[in-house]
Image 1 (cartoon, helix red, strand yellow):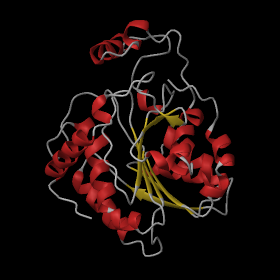
Image 2 (cartoon, one colour):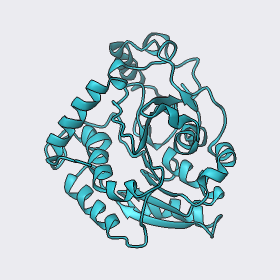
Image 3 (cartoon, one colour):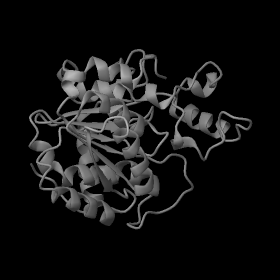
Image 4 (cartoon, one colour):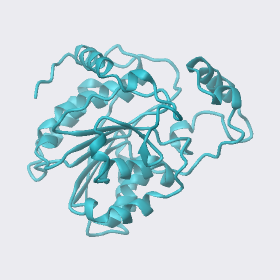
Length: 292
């Protein structure tokens, strides 16, 4: 649950000097989502380039227009990225790597995701949600690492939830995992949770109970879902706050480093051993080792 009420626009003002001139890549930028809110919100602080990556270029274009219509001086590039297919991920990375006018990338925000979709296999034979949310981003980020490492102080931001992925950090790259909290976005648009019907709510609470989350018993009655503009505030904090870099590899929420005594922080999320295991398994699944 997010406890910081500030919007992405508020944080963009706070970190304007750190955003200005940066090259920022965001995946999953469909209108109404947190990724789009982040990109639109930081545009006012004059990044040198926003790279908007998504599987549906029509929706990517809508977000691009929302940016350029208000900030005509901000450059925007669109990239088709289908994370559910490793072949498509490789093609997108190759396209980006051949952009001669983009020498480096300062910030990568791996925001794109699917949630609670029907069980299905990806074209590569992996569970589709695992492929889209983790393997696709893992492969894509590593394939464009050459441009990331050319930045003066690169950051890679991975978006998660209460379930929490492990964080594999590198001394040359600042890396964080973010839980944006309970947000109203298009991620859960196919579920019946908050409106006239809450048919899918009980199954969601059952998963929380299995995971040992208190909300599984307390329910959502006392929780207020925040809009994407608030959900994206920790994205800005992670990407541009100058002091949080001292906590490389941390799990963040509500524009702060999570406290394992009061927040849900899984032990595997902060374990360097588990992070190493996940890295090796991910390399095996995508069929490529990454040494740099």
